[in-house]
Image (cartoon, rainbow, N blue to C red):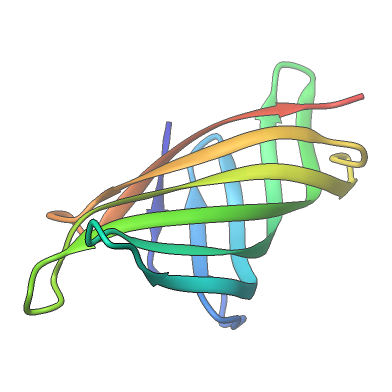
Length: 125
């Protein structure tokens, strides 16, 4: 398990997050393809992201990029304050040590702390 922190080396995208923990690097939202509020009041957003970084493994450090799609879901109070939220990021592929990667990364927002915890499974060929 790891945490999302607020800054990421000055690089920018639609949404840019620095990741720290067993996987350290940056998550860049490349494209938001659909966003809106459903009839039940849940905000849903779909898109594509690139994750750049390194992961410690028993065999040493692995570095590269991961390409993902994502679905983000959240609820908000009438004043716009986020109440709940999280997202799922299926891995579509990778480069470097992550070439041919598949798997999924799941984020859960801790809205009180203003952070998110993430867990994932990265499968390599």
